[in-house]
Length: 246
Image (tube, rainbow, N blue to C red; front, side, top):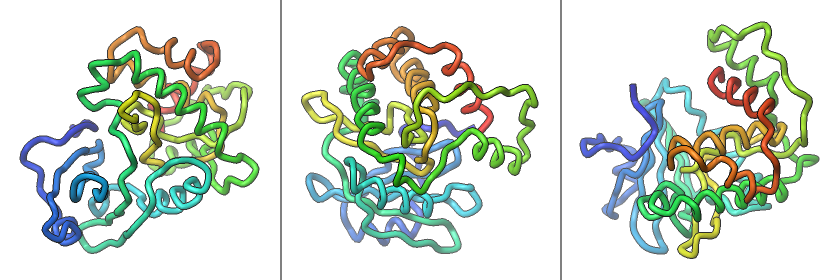
């Protein structure tokens, strides 16, 4: 099984990505659980990032392109520069944002600062993106319908709690998808392919969960404090079960 994280040493560079690099330094920086790869092309202020999704992986870069174009009007997200596809897969090139991932070695060594930035950044995202004008949904019903379509056995007794507050959710609010400035403040968000309207606990349940995966136990309340909300065990439990199903 391939786990999401920094790739190993022997990473095959797809020919399309090699062409996009055009002789610039090319560094693989991330690999997801479906075999998708992200590469940094170039260095310094001119660096860009190329995401590559292998054919047949189910990764929908087109969905991310439309969401980045919409969300970029309201909050810091990568700007789309290029995209395309061939028989091997699809690619998406974006302008690099300032800062580095919240799970870079620097921030994993300073989880208190990183977790606070995660909470503040997620709250800012939820406050800035307008629900009324959002054309995308991340509702429970839509997610379960996709899961059933993929052959997942969805429990009939899965009861959705009443919504706390509808916001435009990130859709994959795990720690690696928040970037931090050098001073420890949040810089922006990446990987918005599932962005859409849902209860804010759909994001919060997973964001807090990811603190344990990335920094160890004991950081969930710190993220909620930075966001400005009290724990909600019922909604947290439900949306974590939904995450595992979908």
